[in-house]
Length: 384
Image (tube, rainbow, N blue to C red; front, top):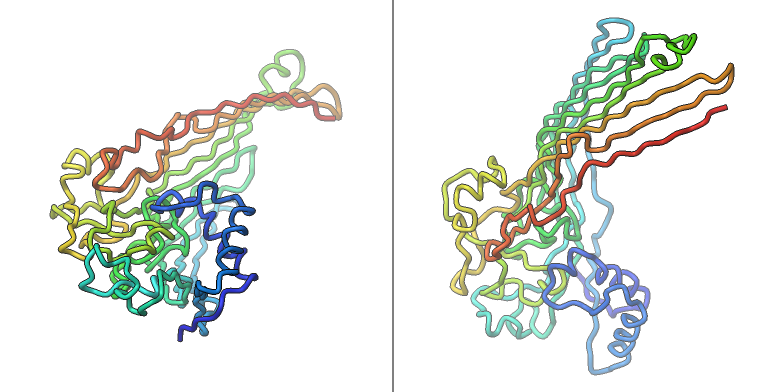
């Protein structure tokens, strides 16, 4: 059950946090000049609350509660030697009653863009746009998790971990996860149609690490021992699938999300113009196959698009860190440590989620972002 109550001063901090949501500010059509200006925010609401001609209400779901989380896990371990262990396991979770942002007063089906902003054209007449937090979301997660670990012995330790998983939900956050997913369903009358791959879905993740102390001249006797002994190498790597994101129409010609889009962004999606399985293609492959031409923006004659939520996926993460360390003994309780750490050793770029608006000339132009680069940190430490 949904209830209306008068807006209270205690609600203002929460409203201020909504205003400061950076992704929502980026996607919204109308924003404050400075969303972080609390003084301007307080002055704005002081004028509204002091005007008896303005009706202010906050939506409260009387059944609002903490979500339910169920988890099942099973693991089998096999010890091959005293320092080598293999683990294979299953982890599954189910989220019920998750927090979700809902358009609580959507425009009526059949309203045109010209009158969609008229409050008489809404489900609850004479009431403006309303964003509601409810327990209407759900999620399901299944994963196969494996690891092979070599405990430290003879100066060497290592671990390799692989996860194969699928993560499905109806909404990944109550705030926008990225510019490629807006935290509200495009069709307020059919929110279940937004059930899809979660924005946090990563089907494949492989990570590993090792530390190896070179076995030469460990006692560091003499000049040769001090130069060639005490060397250690280490590394950590991560190979991971990219993030799912949604193609966006860039406009709301039928007024399906009229006004609430100014609060959370425009979630309207386009139509698909291809039979290709875009979810299995990289950004480069989609651009080579036609890019924007694979989608058709909707017009005022169509309320919402048929393209699914999170049907695209950004390029994955391929990161390798490498370290080189030299310990030189200066006495019984003293040593000099020289180390060089190479972050993103292969200088691979992680572009993240690109522009997903199909009407934009920068659609899927991930190369417009920095993507990161290699960093080398050299340090010298005296230990005593």
